[in-house]
Image (tube, rainbow, N blue to C red; front, side):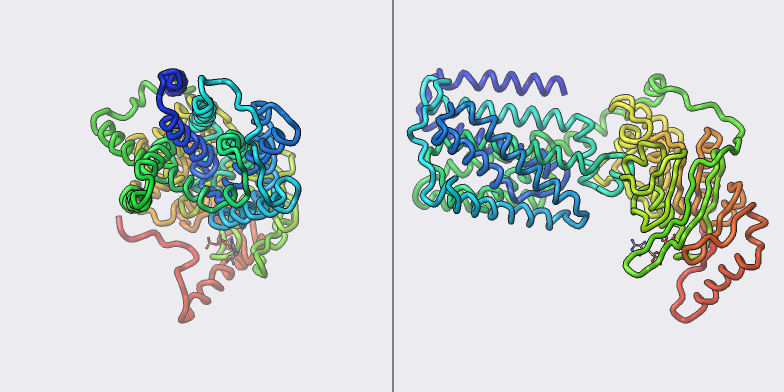
Length: 600
Ligand SMILES: Nc1ncnc2c1ncn2[C@@H]1O[C@H](COP(=O)(O)OP(=O)(O)OP(=O)(O)O)[C@@H](O)[C@H]1O
């Protein structure tokens, strides 16, 4: 990152001498527009590209910046440069207020967020148009003095746009390489899982939105003076956010430099064809390029180049040597005989209902330190729901869950993860665009371990070796088979260094030999001191691993105790038999207690 940072500064300093080279004003204006769009597309990408929350309201924040500068410079005679921080602050404030509401509502994701931000643009435009801020005729800024930064006014505008572009690109670079950026990329792939792994999703989205809006506000403030006549009709159009989105998508939204490529390409293409029919040709050509890129390079121009480059390097360079990495990593805790201790997790009267379905009906349950507790029960009895509420994935409807003496029911999932609870998902939910290594490093950064990025990566190598995934470290999750994806879930949960590990049907779908491997792995995990809650239908594994089992039936605890004893109790047998009989009916599905697959 340091090299890129210095490179951007050097490029900025190099480009800053241009106004003194005596270029015609026309070229300075074209370059101004390129930098203007680079700054806008990059600022948009900070939230929308990184976290996947596509905003179509960038025009609103840009417009707020324009009107803040226009109002302060014309009505309050504030020197132009002083208005720019105010433009940033107003746009960031509005973005924060909008985000504070929008991000609280779970349903406002993807297209709903896009529509909401688009609607916000029209609300802002209406307010500005119908109040003295504009009032209808627009705001003339021709009397506002252009600061004498460059040798000419056009040179000054070019330098202002250059400063805004450098500032925005540096912000994008720093976020990209930071913990904040890692969290945003995880939100992009699976927000719920990111939260459960310890990413404070609400705070991160809000922070990215505020930064994105603030930077757009600065660009708006500069542009207000550049065009010198500000109107709502020209400012709050759908064309502006659409252009920004297309620029970022063309260049590639998953890299800090993608929007630079897209904005430069589209602006130059559009301005190469100006005047008469050629303007139409320019627009048509731009559209064509976009269609081709979206169809054949969904990761954008830069994304595609990096992919090719990565593939070539990947073929030529061996993966990071584990032995070298292992030297940096603290050794795993020594294997100790499990000692079952005091109560670590306590649930009392836990209820959870989903629109009419009562999944949990007053569950009382204790989990003791160092034990492997099996949660068993027929399909639909509430086992996964219990894991979901204990990990904070869902809020309880009523009841209390305490962890290490502290109430965790009602706490956000990321705080529960920080406290030391990790989980796996019944159907693996890796972050699709992160490599296996990055998938494992993320919980090491955001979970109970709270490691810095570099140490987290070293820790991830250790857990990859532990789960036998070292060779697949640089693969994407889509390239793994089911067994490897399940073990990736293990590695991710372990990397957070949890006190309690909740495994949700990690053995389903595995072959008998893979089950043996997984059973051995779970034993090793427990031997390292973890407490395990184990939801499973494979009885052989349950008998081999569990110190105690709790049987769920219809959302309630039916029985608990030593595995062999409990499984023979009549009420337990009849709960399972009851389901088996249900399933013997014509519309039946698979058995409650899983038979191991016959295939090897
Ligand atoms: N997100 C949800 N929305 C609506 N209903 C749900 C949801 N999650 C679970 N349920 C319902 O809650 C009940 C308990 O489901 P849960 O997945 O906890 O059972 P389970 O014991 O884990 O079953 P299985 O062994 O098949 O995984 C079921 O009736 C299920 O349909």
